[in-house]
Each structure stands twice: as C-alpha cells, then as structure tokens.
Length: 72
Image (tube, rainbow, N blue to C red):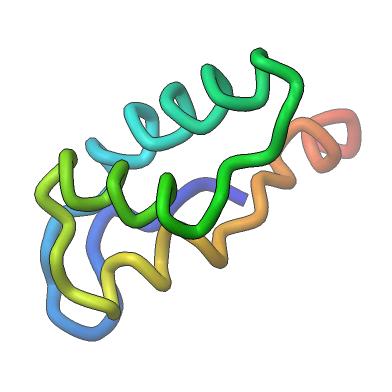
C-alpha cells in the first residue's frame, strides 16, 4: 500500500524519507547487485533514521499500490 506518514511506535515522520531510501537502494540495484546490510545501514544513517522502529517501518514496507490500482 502507501507508506505510512508516521512511525507507528514513536510518531516520527518517515514518509518523506521513504522516497530517498528507495532511490538509494535502486541506485545500488542498478549496478547489478543487491544492497548489503551494511549498505542499508549506511543509507539509514545518512538519512538520519536512527531508531529501529522507524527503520522497521521502511524496511518492512511492501509497495502494493500498483497491484491494487486496477481494482479501484
């Protein structure tokens, strides 16, 4: 679905960081490889996402909007 605007646990705004996170991950994938856990951690650190609850919200998000749109 759509990324939640705020973290469910702490209330920090995370929706604005999601696009930048996806962009950085896609840059790594464009090189023909999957990002390592260390690279993911570096991306989060660069974006200023320090809390594990906020990281969980972004990492565990599954973008299904393109699959659901034909049914609306």
